[in-house]
Length: 349
Image (cartoon, rainbow, N blue to C red; front, side, top):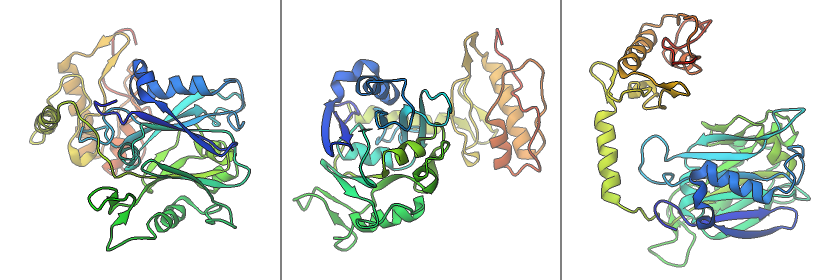
């Protein structure tokens, strides 16, 4: 399966200690990481009413067609799905996400996603090196990863995976010109909170990437799964590489007007790159898409509050804005605003 997909899904059964594969092509009608991940979950998880910490729960880490490519604003994102532990006492199917190198490494290794079922009889970690997948001992008598925090476990896995480095390159295949990488693997781990089944425990990746919604750190811990590590040395097939590069260049040129801090796309949250909010999402609701002029004025007003470090003003009857505090915190606002809301409303809200 081409067009941005690697073509295969990895299924790891920790109870039986075996590995199997599914064809991404069989699930393409569901589209993208969230859709395909949801479809496979409902196929593999036989009882959807179980507790999140039950061995029958299935936790996945999925990518979509743009991960591992040069597509802006999404190529480094990965999706985590399963029955979440955070909604105690009633658990339900949910999702989270994180950014970093993991998604790209998974695609380069030849996998569109990883699905973990069952529960290991002792702490383990999953070691993916291209098409070679191993369930390794994470206990004190093995690689001694259990009990480490997420930074420590990543550093330890880097050493374990790259122990045969030759002048900075690690050989994963049999060819001089393929199967080699100078990169560390992408590692996703739970920390001591997940090991101890704290229901809001997160999964962390490289310090700055965290899947914090759903309590999936506790789900990893309940399966005696410490980490998933992946390194890939392959490539992805893009249907039209030139068109993708042209689109990337066009987006970089037209997504924002740095001189005036004004968005150039109607109805899109767009901020200056240094504020870390470029092209976040479309401003459309069930009542209809916002008028571009209103969207532009609202974005300008939020930008000015960020730049001048002034508290946000609450406007009655407006659509809630969950990102406004993040914007002001980025600009080092003196205090957290109260009544945080956007300045525009959508029909029917």
